[in-house]
Length: 210
Image (cartoon, rainbow, N blue to C red; front, side):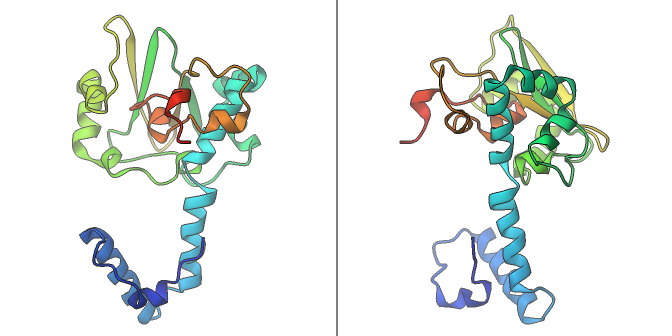
């Protein structure tokens, strides 16, 4: 996706949030000073919007739902299985994939900083890096999940995985009912970023936008 960073003054940004306005102002200043090449910014933005992001993780999950052999490989050696699909890079070198089941719900946090698998999930959301999430996810995971709208039965175990510089985690959410015979592309549309962190569930077929 191309972005005309050097033509921002041609557009009305009055409706943009304050943080967006600040980012655009800083970006324009860096470009004017010659510190940043607009073309390089376009490449970076395109990379994280279209080449590195949750859509990559969604394809990994969809393949695991569709291909039992790949699923086994993914759970045995997440790093290798993910790389086989072409997804590798920063903070995605060492991956462990944990599966949600009828008996277990998994949730990922990084209590020390904000280690996050960029290669399959893109940039981390602000809340993932926040101190309240990083502390409460370990102390009160069910309470945190409830705040995300996820209710876990009392008899279902909640496991919290703490990412580190050496290991990052990806949740393999449960495949929704009513998706028998679906293609990998259709299944990928059900996989949300939050479902791969464990703070959400995969969408049901009736939740997919038309």
